[in-house]
Length: 275
Image (cartoon, rainbow, N blue to C red; front, side, top):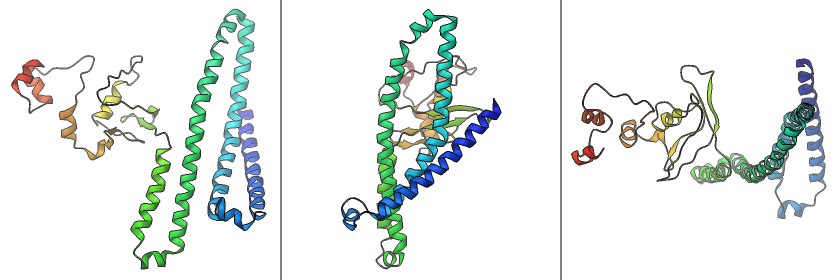
């Protein structure tokens, strides 16, 4: 089984490299056959070359990785249904009702992702074109003191690309970095909204609040409050604005007043009595 899996990966990788090379050659031949006005009205040579390299790499990744996974998953899906019908045909017929919902959910997710990818790809190509123009005429840019303007133009193109992407978070356990806690976590809570994290025990739900209080930082991604990353805010200010009351809260061996003052030093007596 492992040998067939390795051979499949090598075969699809070699096929993807061959197709990418053929696509680049065909694309270049098509560009060379175009009239000059095509590059004046439709696109520029720099953008066309950038798309040739960027899109063909995506084609290679799609054929080399995703086609193999598609065949694997479809084989598992069909084989599972055959075994299920042999073992219990009635339950299998009932479970078939979930297939249209899964297809609709997958389609509704893939279409926006394709649109955002297309917008981001165009923005990255334009940003690369700005860099190429700036570096190619760096003497002229420096003579007119246009470095900051070129950098701002480049940043504006990147902001378009960032706006069209879905940001994901990644975190691992501090004591055991090899254990991944979150992968692809995306959570957005608006102001004055009540949100609940539901899950089984020991699924690290409280870790989300640990990120909010900045007990530790994520390995990738960022935590934002009102659009500002937590790394820009002071820890003392964050601790005075929010607090975590766990399922089994721990109180110090003193009065309730002093326990509250440990979490919030500057508080009115009237507010303290209410809490």
